Image 1 (cartoon, rainbow, N blue to C red):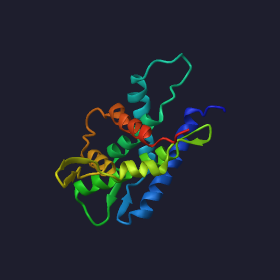
Image 2: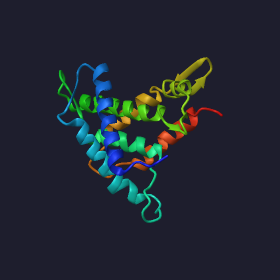
Image 3: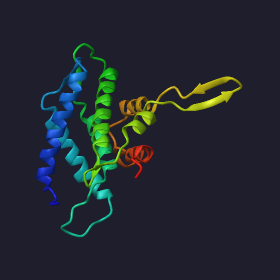
Image 4: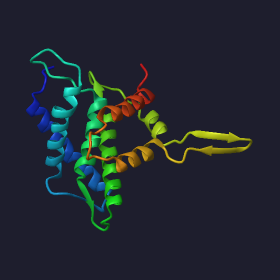
Length: 191
């Protein structure tokens, strides 16, 4: 299979941003994208990858490009959303709610990349395992007949983390990518 050029990759990702924005608007009637949201997201994403992420990766032979692993692609995509903040609310002007809305969009983008991940045309993620992992809470205390569960599931806690993320400093691309790597091992299709 012939590798795509960087310009082809950028064009492909721009189409994906437009698709994700459209999907998000369909399920969030109060969400309004900022002007040129897809273009701003795409531009920020590629600058983040080229100037921040790739320099941290192990060197490759001259003339070869890094293959950015899916975990890092997912992480960079989520953090791009939180840095650009591409959605505003029609009815609510609170910064807290706007950040939460954008964190939900970041989650949609991340899970879309995650569940559509294929190698040699083969799906890698078991959707049932993913649902079980992200929508359940774990037991943290059992005392006699009383059970206490952690108050947030993985999805809720990750969205809260994204919402509260400080995007003014260095973004935790590698640390966040480990969240997605761990989730992969919890949800991968067994061969």
